[in-house]
Every structure is written in C-alpha cells, then in structure tokens.
Image (cartoon, rainbow, N blue to C red):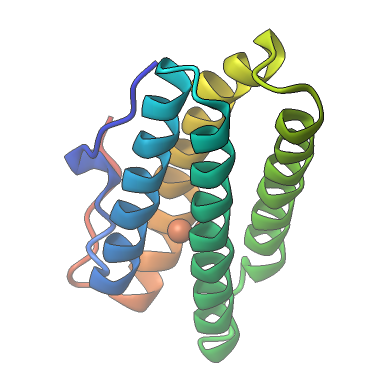
Length: 139
Ligand SMILES: [Fe+2]
Ligand SMILES: [Fe+2]
C-alpha cells in the first residue's frame, strides 16, 4: 500500500497541514526502505517518522490546551495509542527484523491510521482553530 498526500487530508489549518505533509514524507521514506528490504533504513526512517509524529502530537496537544478544546481527552488518547503502536513495532523490527507482521503493519495499519486520524480528529480540531479556512471532510 502506498501513501500519498491527497486534498482530503488538508485541514485548512496551515501549521497542522505542514506537519502532516512532513510526516507523510517520512512515512513514504519508510515504505521505500521497506520495498528495498533495507532493515537499517527501515529502522532509521521509522525513528525519524516517530520523532516527527511525537513533536506534532505535542504541538496539537498544546493547541488543544490553549483553546480549551472539548474533545481533547479523546484526541490525546488517540495520539497515545498511535505512539504505543509505533513503539511496539519499532521494538519488533529491532528484535526480529522485517517480519511479515511488521510489513503488514507498516504498509497497512500505520498508513490507514494516520490518514483516518487526520480526516477525523484533526479535521475537527482544525475547524475550531481555523473555522473559516478549515475544509469540510470529503471522501
Ligand atoms: Fe491529532
Ligand atoms: Fe495531526
């Protein structure tokens, strides 16, 4: 499965969209390394992508706190759950290499989760942060 930036992933809140594009490009590097079965590059790109994701989540959580965002707890839990998942698979690839389970996760759930999160939780947050500029969720 490939991941590319599509317009339905644009929230309309510029700093958030910029971060999301960076994460997507990090995940594309991970997929490329996976395609080439380059375990060292997979580990390195996963580490970079995770660092970007963690920094981005912290940014959104700060915005949620500043704006007293109503759905903050649920959104934070979605972030935490994603980071737990990434951490688990990061350990798996360090310990066991490029297993079928890892490949299925990195090429499937990881990408689907990220896109789903943007088009649901992040889109809702963007509507509060940038009510005029935020785009409606389109399928
Ligand atoms: Fe988020
Ligand atoms: Fe986000």
